[in-house]
Image (tube, rainbow, N blue to C red; front, top):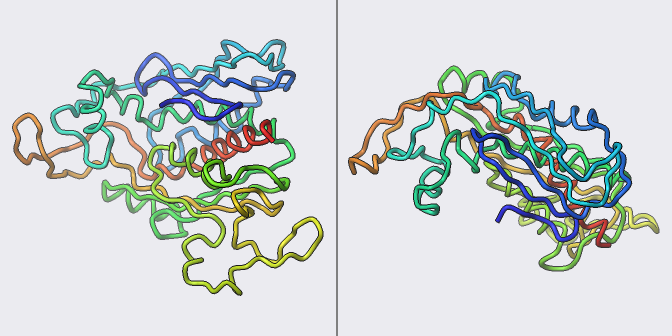
Length: 321
């Protein structure tokens, strides 16, 4: 559904063009210092404005409704909302011709046409602003760790700015390859099988709209390696290894080495090029021309979201450990 976590539990809500979007965080320990300005750095990283991002400009000012008193968490649920200020709902009318690659079609069928489809509704990347806010709090819980994500490639290129600009000029979009590392992680977080660190991080990361793949450590390259190549040899009594092909996780449990994973983000579904697709009203192939404001490369704004959901997972595991 719309919640994730066992103890440190987050619940997202809202629609892209509704009154507001937000998040409710349950299970946060009391006494954590939270200043309003603590949110700004990460929220600004997610905000649009750079070349290749949407021209929709939302201030993303967090309004804390509960759970924080005199700049300290109280232990009760924390509710944070972000009002939607810059919307153009007239640009969105895809009930007859759903956008190819987008959730329009499945949303209409699943919710019997009652869903709010403006700006993608509840399926929009807009909803991730709440995850970023929860990530700010989660990072404070796991203060011994440092999480860093970055965009390595746009499309298949490392010259990211030029790749994005070319896609924009051709009225198209491109995806991206992102990497994430967690430094300072202790040994022993996570469980075997269904509660493995890989399972939980993957679950959270795949909840970000547009994510299509994830790999840890050597990832898919491990299939080409021999055991003698893939094995990470121990070199110290604290579990430090010579290599890190396992990505910092053994048997689903952190081994004290850096957690390392990579994520594949697909191209933004909404593009300005004309597309021939099915009109569900006329029951014929029709031409779809999408207007409105969209990211040329949504992966540009994803690193901070990936950091946030990773922090949420690790905060939950720390509290449970």
